[in-house]
Image (tube, rainbow, N blue to C red; front, side, top):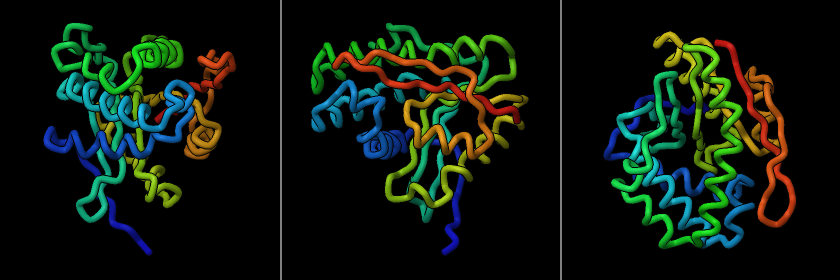
Length: 212
């Protein structure tokens, strides 16, 4: 069955819908399960962090969507070379402290520290050229995964970025399954590392790039 996919730019009124989609998609992702082992706490943390980060970044970066029959099935945040992470004050103004109501402070802070380490190779690499775009978040509705939507969504990003002068696209993942997906779509690894997790183990992190 052929599905008609509509690609576009996220509207502010769709932010909560995109957050709920991301929460469902990330519930079983190592990037979160290693830091929020309890499912209810993880759901609360995901929903709150995604919403507050979305509010803080809205209008400052690029939020792209994919829809089928008007239903959002994928969303991504893509940062252009001019993007600068908002200040701590801006995050506080948009209610970041609310994140700590539904999750343990230690768990949130451990996750934030990990995210800084995991994203550093991409942030450093993006500084090497003025035409590199960074995908800082991407999710596909679980019920619509493995149906080719993710690959078509990436194709939309590539066109969107090229139209704005971009020549490379980078991102990172902590999942071997996701890594295989990105490599299938033409990405190559430019950094691989182990990241410590709270139980004393290690989590893999791969940063990948694609020339457009």
